[in-house]
Figure (tube, rainbow, N blue to C red):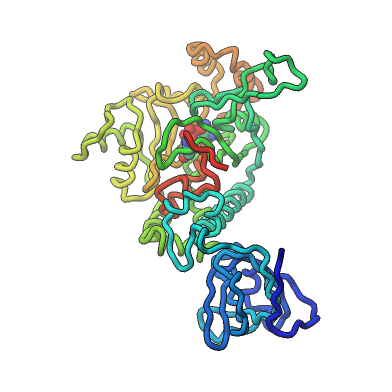
Length: 467
Ligand code: 4AD
């Protein structure tokens, strides 16, 4: 039941509903407005009662001024309120405007004893992670969600500006994108119209581990395509950089035979999105860089200052072998790079993102283009490694030569499964390539967040699917 408390006389003026971000702009001074949100602080003083309300539209809260005679025990930290009143210039420097309350409704009470977050306390990301249904009520997580939303916009606008067409690749698919990750199989538990033993799709179906092959279909008709959506991998890992459901940005560029064309898109997208986020979410990013991950801003500025260096896999192996650091995993030519190696390489290159190209052919899936003229047998593949996280992007030129592709598929016994893929090379095939960027790892990288579970609204990982 909502309770209304008349604080001052109630005027029958027209009332405009404003978001707090709009109210704080200060352009509506003198107007009669209504705001709705959640109480962030309550400060009774001799002459007035001050409290702050936040509605998630920005980090700042709006100060509400009510008479000191307001005795309202239900006006507590976390309670939901609706306040009508006059927007006034605030006498305090910190706040450009405040709302002189005429009427306050308590819309939803919040018992401060049971509420897991306490007024004026700074809770760690680990602590708030225990409350997936409530953590959006904290400053840190609501900032994170606004940054995530703005970074999504930034990535879409990068591709739009550069003439890429967005493709909604399917979530349910019958292809496993050969080796991209462990698959979740889709099963129908209740059959209404089908025989109990009948498979709904008549073929095994999975949650997508990558939209790459669907993008490759489209790259036969569009010179640049991308997709940005949920991706699923049954990683049996509790690591700080793996999830079972994560968002991936994938792009495919047609008419290219050079890895540089791919690294250019990756680097430009990283720069333009990061600059956009720093400019459009300055307050939220500051909260992270000042209080949650202090010192990280210098690292981000350093990343944006220099071009990203490019080294080959063979050079990377040399660097690892010349290092005095002891690695847990082998560093022989032909071995896959592990997180410890990636982190070392990033440090070695000055703690900025670094591209590693031309991986051993045998490490890469069938679609990676054979660097036939290389002395060691390599594929035209590229990873982008970034500070604090390791691998952020993985990509390659795709094998467009029908004879080579067919031979590799035959060798793997996959010729029939991928006959449609061979068709792409038979009908108007063009040299092309693409990559995938892990969106949560990108947020970890620019915000300095150690655990991937803290940059996604509802993390899914092995033994955990809360809510
Ligand atoms: O390197 P990956 O496996 O590349 C592909 O799937 C390609 N088919 C993409 C393409 O060429 N279109 O994954 C791409 C990126 C990784 O670099 C990493 O950032 C992220 O996706 N990623 C994960 N992020 C969170 N949790 C996981 N389990 C992830 N697995 C990969």
